[in-house]
Length: 177
Image (tube, rainbow, N blue to C red):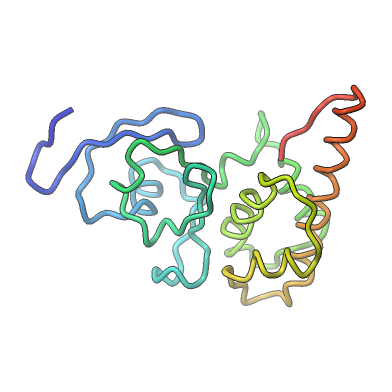
Protein backbone atom coordinates (compact mmCIF):
# COMPACT_ATOMS: atom_id res chain seq x y z
CA UNK A 1 0.00 0.00 0.00
CA UNK A 2 1.11 3.54 -0.61
CA UNK A 3 -0.01 6.74 1.05
CA UNK A 4 -2.73 8.53 -0.90
CA UNK A 5 -2.21 11.99 0.61
CA UNK A 6 0.47 13.63 2.75
CA UNK A 7 -1.58 13.13 5.92
CA UNK A 8 -2.86 9.61 5.13
CA UNK A 9 -0.82 6.51 5.77
CA UNK A 10 -1.27 2.80 5.13
CA UNK A 11 -1.38 0.48 8.10
CA UNK A 12 -2.44 -3.02 8.96
CA UNK A 13 -3.41 -4.65 12.21
CA UNK A 14 -5.24 -7.68 13.43
CA UNK A 15 -8.50 -6.76 15.17
CA UNK A 16 -10.32 -9.48 17.09
CA UNK A 17 -8.50 -12.08 15.01
CA UNK A 18 -9.20 -10.47 11.63
CA UNK A 19 -6.43 -8.92 9.53
CA UNK A 20 -7.32 -5.34 8.54
CA UNK A 21 -5.59 -3.07 6.00
CA UNK A 22 -6.44 0.63 6.28
CA UNK A 23 -5.33 4.04 5.16
CA UNK A 24 -5.70 6.47 8.05
CA UNK A 25 -5.02 10.10 8.79
CA UNK A 26 -2.09 10.51 11.15
CA UNK A 27 -4.18 12.44 13.70
CA UNK A 28 -6.87 9.74 14.14
CA UNK A 29 -6.98 7.81 17.36
CA UNK A 30 -7.30 4.06 17.60
CA UNK A 31 -10.71 4.57 19.26
CA UNK A 32 -11.92 6.61 16.26
CA UNK A 33 -10.76 3.97 13.78
CA UNK A 34 -12.28 1.11 15.79
CA UNK A 35 -15.62 2.87 16.25
CA UNK A 36 -16.04 4.81 13.01
CA UNK A 37 -14.16 2.80 10.41
CA UNK A 38 -14.61 -0.74 11.75
CA UNK A 39 -17.99 -0.34 13.47
CA UNK A 40 -16.71 -1.73 16.80
CA UNK A 41 -18.71 0.59 19.02
CA UNK A 42 -18.15 -1.46 22.17
CA UNK A 43 -15.05 0.66 22.71
CA UNK A 44 -16.62 3.60 24.53
CA UNK A 45 -15.42 7.19 24.55
CA UNK A 46 -16.02 9.25 27.67
CA UNK A 47 -13.32 11.61 28.95
CA UNK A 48 -11.04 11.35 25.87
CA UNK A 49 -8.10 12.17 28.17
CA UNK A 50 -7.17 8.62 29.24
CA UNK A 51 -8.51 9.14 32.75
CA UNK A 52 -11.71 7.05 32.86
CA UNK A 53 -10.64 3.83 31.13
CA UNK A 54 -13.91 3.40 29.16
CA UNK A 55 -11.93 3.08 25.91
CA UNK A 56 -9.56 0.35 27.14
CA UNK A 57 -8.62 -2.29 24.55
CA UNK A 58 -5.87 -4.91 24.47
CA UNK A 59 -2.94 -4.12 22.17
CA UNK A 60 -0.60 -7.07 21.84
CA UNK A 61 -2.12 -8.39 25.07
CA UNK A 62 -1.60 -5.26 27.17
CA UNK A 63 -4.37 -2.90 28.26
CA UNK A 64 -4.20 0.39 26.36
CA UNK A 65 -6.30 3.56 26.21
CA UNK A 66 -7.64 3.72 22.66
CA UNK A 67 -8.52 7.42 23.03
CA UNK A 68 -4.88 8.33 23.62
CA UNK A 69 -3.28 5.98 21.15
CA UNK A 70 -2.95 7.05 17.54
CA UNK A 71 -4.22 4.42 15.14
CA UNK A 72 -0.84 4.38 13.38
CA UNK A 73 0.78 3.29 16.64
CA UNK A 74 -1.16 0.03 16.31
CA UNK A 75 0.35 -0.70 12.88
CA UNK A 76 1.38 -4.34 12.88
CA UNK A 77 -0.25 -5.00 16.26
CA UNK A 78 -2.96 -7.33 17.45
CA UNK A 79 -5.90 -5.41 18.92
CA UNK A 80 -8.72 -6.95 20.93
CA UNK A 81 -11.92 -5.08 21.74
CA UNK A 82 -14.75 -6.00 24.09
CA UNK A 83 -16.52 -7.63 21.13
CA UNK A 84 -13.83 -10.35 21.17
CA UNK A 85 -14.98 -11.59 24.59
CA UNK A 86 -18.26 -13.10 23.35
CA UNK A 87 -18.44 -16.77 22.48
CA UNK A 88 -19.60 -18.13 19.13
CA UNK A 89 -23.27 -17.28 18.63
CA UNK A 90 -23.03 -14.13 20.74
CA UNK A 91 -23.22 -15.84 24.13
CA UNK A 92 -21.41 -14.20 27.03
CA UNK A 93 -17.84 -15.35 27.55
CA UNK A 94 -16.73 -16.58 30.99
CA UNK A 95 -15.49 -13.16 32.14
CA UNK A 96 -18.65 -11.42 30.98
CA UNK A 97 -20.80 -14.10 32.64
CA UNK A 98 -18.93 -13.78 35.95
CA UNK A 99 -19.47 -10.02 35.87
CA UNK A 100 -23.18 -10.44 35.02
CA UNK A 101 -23.64 -13.04 37.78
CA UNK A 102 -22.07 -10.59 40.25
CA UNK A 103 -24.31 -7.73 39.06
CA UNK A 104 -21.12 -5.77 38.48
CA UNK A 105 -22.56 -2.91 36.46
CA UNK A 106 -25.59 -0.64 36.60
CA UNK A 107 -25.61 1.61 33.52
CA UNK A 108 -22.66 -0.38 32.06
CA UNK A 109 -21.12 2.52 30.14
CA UNK A 110 -17.81 1.73 31.87
CA UNK A 111 -18.20 -2.04 31.37
CA UNK A 112 -16.11 -2.42 28.17
CA UNK A 113 -13.11 -0.75 29.79
CA UNK A 114 -13.38 -2.80 32.97
CA UNK A 115 -13.89 -6.00 30.98
CA UNK A 116 -10.85 -5.41 28.78
CA UNK A 117 -8.68 -4.44 31.76
CA UNK A 118 -9.81 -7.61 33.56
CA UNK A 119 -9.29 -9.66 30.38
CA UNK A 120 -5.65 -8.53 30.20
CA UNK A 121 -5.25 -9.21 33.91
CA UNK A 122 -6.71 -12.72 33.63
CA UNK A 123 -4.37 -13.51 30.74
CA UNK A 124 -1.50 -13.26 33.23
CA UNK A 125 -2.83 -16.48 34.85
CA UNK A 126 -1.89 -15.61 38.39
CA UNK A 127 -3.69 -15.79 41.70
CA UNK A 128 -5.02 -12.39 42.73
CA UNK A 129 -6.16 -11.03 46.06
CA UNK A 130 -9.07 -8.60 46.30
CA UNK A 131 -6.58 -5.83 47.04
CA UNK A 132 -4.58 -6.68 43.90
CA UNK A 133 -7.76 -6.75 41.79
CA UNK A 134 -8.75 -3.33 43.15
CA UNK A 135 -5.28 -1.96 42.39
CA UNK A 136 -5.29 -3.36 38.84
CA UNK A 137 -8.75 -1.90 38.15
CA UNK A 138 -7.98 1.48 39.74
CA UNK A 139 -7.42 3.12 36.35
CA UNK A 140 -11.07 2.56 35.41
CA UNK A 141 -13.83 4.79 36.72
CA UNK A 142 -17.45 3.95 37.37
CA UNK A 143 -19.98 6.55 38.46
CA UNK A 144 -22.74 4.06 39.38
CA UNK A 145 -21.27 1.42 41.69
CA UNK A 146 -19.13 1.29 44.79
CA UNK A 147 -16.77 -1.02 42.86
CA UNK A 148 -17.47 -3.93 45.27
CA UNK A 149 -19.58 -5.85 42.74
CA UNK A 150 -17.01 -5.22 40.00
CA UNK A 151 -14.25 -6.69 42.17
CA UNK A 152 -16.61 -9.59 43.02
CA UNK A 153 -17.07 -10.28 39.31
CA UNK A 154 -13.35 -10.29 38.55
CA UNK A 155 -12.70 -12.48 41.59
CA UNK A 156 -15.36 -14.93 40.36
CA UNK A 157 -13.74 -14.96 36.90
CA UNK A 158 -10.31 -15.62 38.46
CA UNK A 159 -11.78 -18.56 40.41
CA UNK A 160 -13.60 -19.94 37.34
CA UNK A 161 -10.45 -19.69 35.24
CA UNK A 162 -8.38 -21.46 37.92
CA UNK A 163 -11.02 -24.18 38.15
CA UNK A 164 -11.08 -24.71 34.38
CA UNK A 165 -7.27 -24.93 34.34
CA UNK A 166 -7.34 -27.55 37.09
CA UNK A 167 -10.01 -29.46 35.17
CA UNK A 168 -7.94 -29.27 31.96
CA UNK A 169 -4.83 -30.43 33.82
CA UNK A 170 -6.70 -33.47 35.12
CA UNK A 171 -8.02 -34.22 31.62
CA UNK A 172 -11.48 -32.65 31.92
CA UNK A 173 -11.35 -30.05 29.10
CA UNK A 174 -10.48 -26.37 28.84
CA UNK A 175 -12.18 -23.00 28.86
CA UNK A 176 -11.41 -19.48 27.59
CA UNK A 177 -11.27 -16.24 29.59
